[in-house]
Image 1 (cartoon, helix red, strand yellow):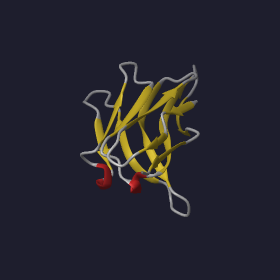
Image 2: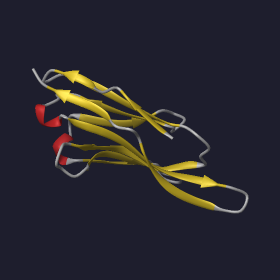
Image 3: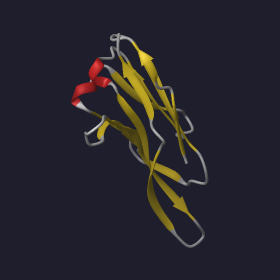
Length: 125
């Protein structure tokens, strides 16, 4: 359901853009974002967009990435991007996209959280 791409090796101070596409039969997306994880550590939130139905979208960033990372979606709201600038060695991690997806049938409506496969970002000189 989620396909992430864009990771790689970059020098400190450099930039990368991650992408994550949502596929399959979905009705809507409540929220979509990025987490990251390093060995031995818990997965942590990087940034998330809550999709507003009647009001505008809202975004949340980890303090450690504020001012450097920007999360956005395409117009169709089925691809999320993470623009990462001024990268630091401590940003090195496996990045996972995450989406809270709403499914609808003729008799039911429910939401489910999906995870992408992870993409490795390495910041090193």
